[in-house]
Length: 501
Image (cartoon, rainbow, N blue to C red; front, side, top):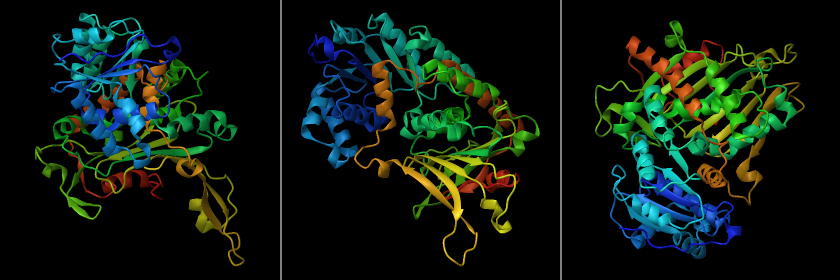
């Protein structure tokens, strides 16, 4: 079935960021849950030029009207009532075309070229599909003469299963697209708080002068999920929490925390500094592998007051699986800025809360003059919350009020809650920002190939160490904060996980 015809020859003034978007996997979960709502919001906010068009591609047989109805249903399910209006919805749906296509066969790709014929807009190819067929799609687009020198490609992570498979996939994409037109998405980089982290660090001397081992004692990064595997057994049991979360999301957050100031905000200036951090990450060898890394796997427990099964009891489970659903570790960035500063990373499924948070623990004053029993609280913390509510809080110490309190200290936050600070502004979803940057042709929020490969290289040595030790993951009940060993790991350093939620 060929896509429906669309108007051509938009006014030149409308072409600054106008694109033709070819979305592969247009009926998949990611597209319906995240991508179409993000595109709709860009359109509704006036950030999508009038002549931009969207071609949905999937294996299912639908005509354009049925496809638009499916997208409309997904939008109405996921948008808030005050975000829906008939005019915006109609305008957005009118942009949509549809093409049924077997992605792995070159037959049918000519219809994409026909859809593009005569269009003055650059094309963006968004691959919302499994990474194993990225190369097939890119080659078929090239073979069908559907590409030009302006075409950009957007690919989802994780890219590969280890360094070797990552290199194979990136080689296949690179045969068709130069690095300057490849956009590797990590949606955490599109979050408002992550953007504010860059501003916080590099626009404020208060933090810029303190951001080193002389003033920071340690750093925590927690990405906790309340859900289990949600029917993703086939994928997740091969990947595990390290590949699924640490290799991309947590290491990207670590890089933004630890990187040196870039010379400017150009894409490669920022990404050069992130690569330096990945190169400086200490590997886990010898005793450190058992002492500083904890693997876990959830057992049956309680979530939101409901009984939930353990990982090995999930539907379709391999009851002999040794795949980890939890990872906690202590690592270090071996350079002048961070020498001796531990970075504690923690991520897992079936946690008590859905939470993504970075906590910067500043060192105590060298000379302490207040109540000795309060010494353990006498340090500032910078808490950067990515979800569920985005915000930044600086925990400071003040005198407790009251005539009978003496000089008792009280910790309290200087708090920037984005929802309260900007009550009339909707905080955009990460995918809105990322899609907008793709439309503009800007890469600074996207991951460069060498970042991906250095991250895999570091994770691969950890996975190889696990295999050599043959140590099974530690059990933890669903609804808890992970194995007791993860608490012991940080406690042995005289510290504790920050859990004041």
